[in-house]
Image (cartoon, rainbow, N blue to C red; front, side, top):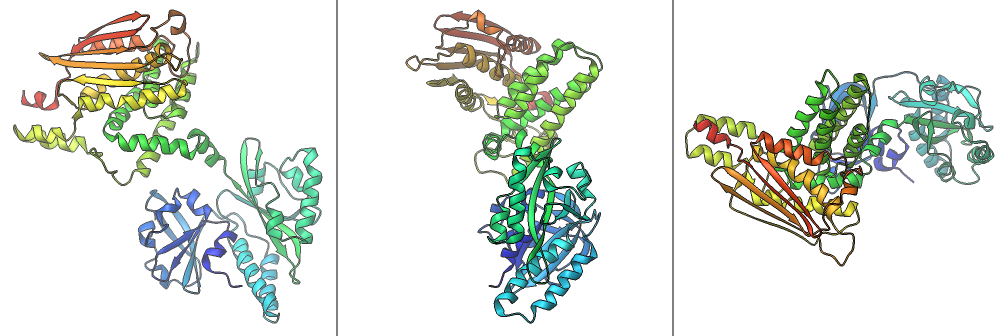
Length: 558
């Protein structure tokens, strides 16, 4: 059978893709998708021109390139990843196969194997049709194996029938496998347990004998191994003699530790999609949360002396902010830092750096995933530009402009219903009602910044310690607010069981450190406010009052 470009992709251990003769992207292999952060749906069922996926600096027209590799800088447009590569193209029928080979070349296979491949190509010309087609498949796969062994984070070694590594291996083997593989058995190279070594010996023997198709047997071998905290992905290819029999096994190894760690940080693609959905549907609130997180992290990073109480209050507020968008990995990491006690300043600083970098990485990933504005009533507006224009013009036009950066306060507070339900899901509880009543007020960024820690921290306490576990009892939250002569009043009541003293100081991921109400009190004091909290057997009542945060246009008008 003849192979087209899409079928050949599976043989290539390098980022590669296939386009048609009009430059439309047809397919890409997993190396390309994972290395450059592209989702397959980017081009599936969509006529995506290659120029909208990748920009090559030194290549004007890919379709006019010869088959020789050409060095060029490139940028993956959707993920904004840039680099330099050797770009190779090959025309197969009416398709073009593109291969991006990283420029950090370390080694190539011994010349012996390239010579064997050339001889294999010549030998195949005189064989019958079936052998000719088989040779074509193997020639294509082995040419790319031998020509592209030098990409970043890859190691190549060749095993004989006894499972011993031949002298022909790349220098990357030492860094990836933490051992020089030459002359060693494959099971020793990957640190396989003793009880698995007999299976590996038989497995390699079956690969060489090929009584069963090589590809089918190869799938039975180890695909990912962990050695000294390094996650190693393994791929297997046949090394064939002139008679087309397998005389060795080419092992292609890749360090995927960074990808595994990223997946662990996000827990799973489903977990990230949950975060992405919440952000996409609450962009206005998310923007304020990001600004608040940046300010909090900046405060922690700039600290020069230990203030454990201050540190833990900031961390507690951060944890609430992360939980608002189901950022579980960051929430857990923050909780772990909160547990630090009697540490020196370098320990605190190292923990803050890890948290800051993880936060930036997640926000960058979210920003890349939200390259197109989602549909809905709110978009990610450039508030600073709007405010700048509004400051230069007079009333009433500046008020119209500023309205673009606000949302209804009732809508904003009502959005916490989803947050409370999420908390209930984590604690196996159920909320039966979330009712918000208040006058017609707008929530600009200053109002959200004032209310977000109060609502987040208080709802965490109410759901964790106040809600009933029993199904037959109703858990209902009522929130009422009003503005009277620039004083904002807010009442939060719930129909729970009341706050029990013995549970208040039982720390968990959601609450229990006794910091939440302290932070709320300080937040209110900063706004010339106060609060009163009442606990009963039928629930809790929080009453608070504070100055209404000045609108930006009020400050400019003065």
